[in-house]
Length: 252
Image (tube, rainbow, N blue to C red):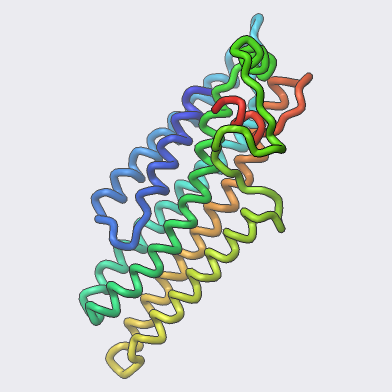
């Protein structure tokens, strides 16, 4: 569980490092760290599967395997994003400086919103994954005489989490991706498609499409992780009604 939480922490850092103006060294370093932690989690899962249970709860191998697969998929998406940004930097020298700066500013603003949405969810997973018992958490709140009225909005400020399709968060994600594509298209349209720049325009279109595809992939795997974390917490607390948003509220 500690290693899983570490995975979420380095994943947040790696996603946070994504920027079309980020240096190749910073992107590669953050990618290297998240790869290392995800590989370590895989090793721990393999070891835990063959350990005897004795008086402990059986190891929930199936759920941890789902988490490992999703985290590995996210690493692959980050790998492609890192290389795509590297290729984009190589092409920047052939473009008008003002056009480059203006377009990168708009597209980076879209990426920032996307990163904040994903980060808020992963931060919640990082915290919730370390909760040992929901019963003990409730007792601790009672002991400290803490009361939360979640519906009245009096609870502490907590990270928002991605919800089911049609929710406000879902709409925000779709809008962000829509704006990203719009700004990418505007950038491409501004590149004069004369004989010498058609190839350049095609390469940039491919690079930006790759980044957009990987963004969608990161969102998809974040949703899968949310399902798996809820399943894991429910398995560890069979007598409790699991709501990750409420648990995060209580932790904060």
